[in-house]
Image (cartoon, rainbow, N blue to C red):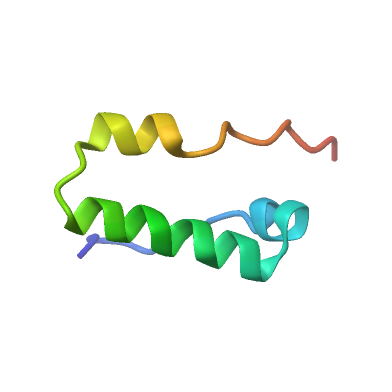
Length: 54
């Protein structure tokens, strides 16, 4: 576990929807558990969303 709290963004959920984002995350977790390398998983992870202007 992490030693401190972490703040994350909901942008992927807003952009892609809750179901699609959860399915993508579950797919990545399954691939990890099957032994896929972190480098391959990172390549499969969609690029960072564009920054949101505040």
